[in-house]
Image 1 (spheres, rainbow, N blue to C red):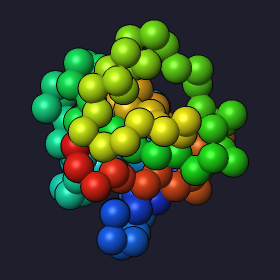
Image 2: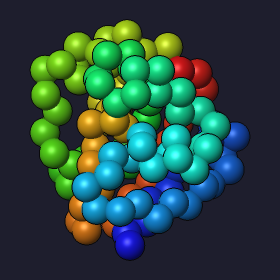
Image 3: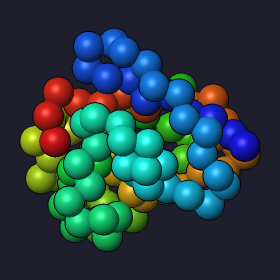
Length: 106
């Protein structure tokens, strides 16, 4: 099973095994990772699963849909060029080893 790394604002790293097809948000919530609130349960309606993707890996992710881009305007943490909603990123073999950094607040 491919793994990803979630990096807390304090630098603490959490490594998760994520089944292919599962969103990064679902995996984080199932594992009890602090900092991923996921109020809407993955419906792209709340922006409480905001993450920063490592810049070098952005091209490996699926393109952002307009609904995700609109929700990223509502994040509590600063929106950056590498911001994504983890509910919209589904695990693939190509994403194995990727790191996502969590913002200070959701």
